[in-house]
Image 1 (cartoon, rainbow, N blue to C red):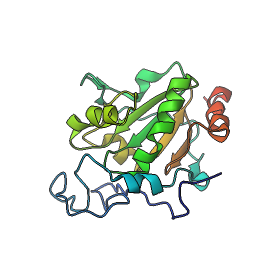
Image 2 (cartoon, rainbow, N blue to C red):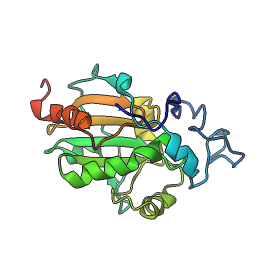
Image 3 (cartoon, rainbow, N blue to C red):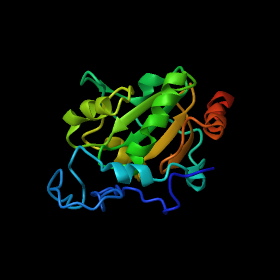
Length: 204
């Protein structure tokens, strides 16, 4: 598989207590909240950082949670109302945890958008930004048509102890198939084969 760069994948760490570091970006910008000193709060990611962000990470696929139900945690729908992952049961869904300040996250957005448009799977991209108000504008400026789901309380990131980006595939019954840490090219034959696993079902 080709990558946008040979540079090692850099992910944004989200430990349970707080963010440990920003994502592939050095900046003196103020943090989004007290105690998050290394988190970039700007709503822009430099274009050169996006271009060099890796978009493939086959060694980061984790199947050890196969069959587990999605956490019953509420986050924000595009209209601001609470929604949970169980709401999407009935069709396979690919949940992507990302943030506007994370270079690799932004790099994979176009291929996630293409996947969503293909109709092969529902793509639910949930922004892990403390300032939820900027997410919809951020997506629109980049021509990304994915719905602006938001998780300003970072409930999903904390539940999954996630490095950003993290993507989780659920089958139609709302059970996990696999999860992947790091950016990926979601509009490739390899991605299609991974997503097709949701149709095979998982243990009850």
